[in-house]
Length: 327
Ligand code: UT7
Image 1 (tube, rainbow, N blue to C red):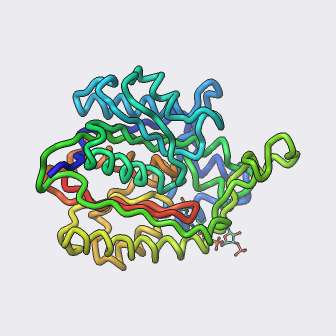
Image 2: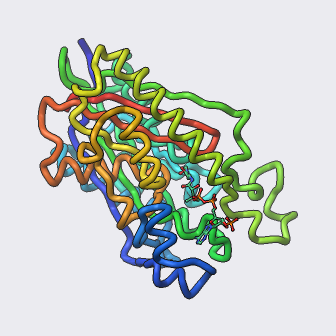
């Protein structure tokens, strides 16, 4: 059976750091509120204005290729999940292709916000299973700081910048690899998280209010939606793979809010110790979040061969995506 297996992971965090103490100077907030309500203590920020999302994506990809023991020219396809590409056109993926020198790969972006990297995994694995390609690079990378309103305490304390990458390779496998991937969308909920300006509905040249280029979010509604949708998605994935909660060794979730993960842990009856959580030091890094947490779990030796890993992400759309991978 032709399967996609993840043979390399990598991540990159930019050097700049904003702590909760920094936010106490910027907006009406407190370290106590942020830690209790979100679990975040610090987040990394791409402060160098000469750098953009493709630079972080390229750095994470180089680490993932090194782990996979592959050259950039081995890649057939590059999928970059991002809502903060370097520019509107061309795609961010073509900049990554150029910077890596991955000249044999076709390259494109997917736009599904926080769910984007798992949608990318869905597409990459499907291309491999179909026989169309052998090797794919799937990246989630975001410079969310560049679209955050640092005067809006409801959103600015939540987000950070980062990149995470996964290298997929075709293999004849019956047990290992991507066992199932599922993606859902509910476009009726599009207003819950959106950036109003900069697209064709409200082009930049017509906008005088800069806050329209920043993230608008109805946090409480998103929170409730996320817990319900991610629990249902987990059950759907486990049913497809004929697994139950005790078969899942690791949950690698999108890191949007520690309380969402606590609620999910209760609903799934999977202890929080089996969740790979890094939100304390990264904040919500949108599409980078899951591949970055996966990379940490692989590199620190928590995720080992033969183990079942449940990956979950949700965000603007609303779009939510998940996968079960046998390592
Ligand atoms: O990655 C995409 C998916 N995104 C998510 O999953 C985000 C999901 N939502 C959340 O994580 C939470 O809803 C937030 C962290 C965004 C907000 O937490 P909450 O407990 O849902 O707070 P809330 O929005 O219900 O607001 C409660 C209070 C409000 O004050 P009043 O109206 O009760 O006086 C807010 O103005 O907390 C206030 N508040 C803050 N206070 C201090 C909101 N942000 C802050 C802040 N510091 N930074």
